[in-house]
Amino acid sequence: RGKRAFIAGVADDNGYGWAIAKSLAAAGAEIVVGTWVPALNIFESSLRRGKFDESRVLPDGSLMEITKVYPMDAVFDSPEDVPEDELVESVKQDFGSIDILVHSLANGPEVSKPLLETSRYGYLAAISASSYSFISLLKHFVPIMNPGGSSISLTYIASERIIPGYGGGMSSAKAALESDTRVLAFEAGRKHKIRVNTISAGPLRSRAAKAIGFIDMMIDYSLANAPLQKELSAEEVGNTAAFLASPLASAITGAVVYVDNGLNAMGVGI
Ligand code: NAD
Image (cartoon, rainbow, N blue to C red; front, side):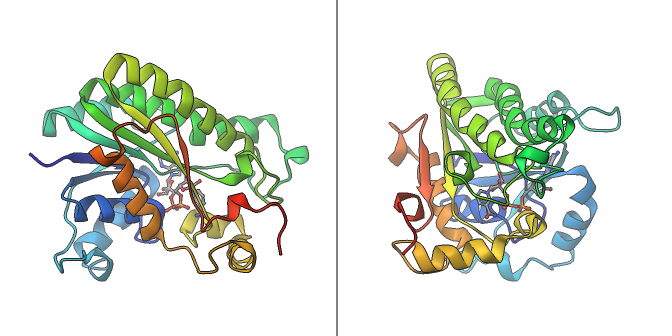
């Protein structure tokens, strides 16, 4: 049987979640996605109306199939939100188990404020939606993940180097996510034989990134300064996720894998 992937954080065809879905589908996985409730209707209707058909084309010419779209909310503090235990219960009833879990979501309400001006509320909201959300997702899904399975999240170099403009505690949230990747790799590895890795991705003009406001500058900076002077494509991140989820990566866990044209290795821009 082919592998089944649940990808949390797909709401259009511009982000890393979509690209990861495509690479996994191209490698033969069945694709199931979780979409944030406020974006769900428009995503599903666009999908139905064929708006994404061009970007659904896989290397063999066929179209990526998304077997099911589930409503999800990574921060469920109001009763109308969808708690993760209900989500996982539905996935279990529909499919029984999954092999691959992808967390491709983040949210920081004060991302455009410097850390020094971030409120406690904004900071905790960033950590809640962007870091704890991964712990919670893995915790709920791990009981229905097959041994040998793999989980992947997306992080950003602002966790370890100063990236002015990535504020509101989002840099802190990514640092937590990377640290949690190591601890969860130990816990989920020992207890469930599940691998836990995170991809530190370079800049992509996604919906979320455009909302931060500095994405074009970051893309230009990378083009000018990275060892590989080409624009990063979402597919390159998708392909790395497919590798990490596959048996080719069976000894890789607890890792932060850079997919950024090598920019992380530079000491100064030149
Ligand atoms: P994106 O807009 O495609 O994805 C973000 C998703 O998060 C959206 O689908 C949104 O609906 C969802 N989301 C937000 N709050 C949520 C919540 N409370 N519950 C459920 N879903 C929620 O943007 P993206 O840039 O592809 O982001 C995906 C991941 O990649 C994020 O973790 C982001 O930090 C990371 N990343 C992005 C870049 C970049 O330059 N775009 C670089 C490095 C890392």
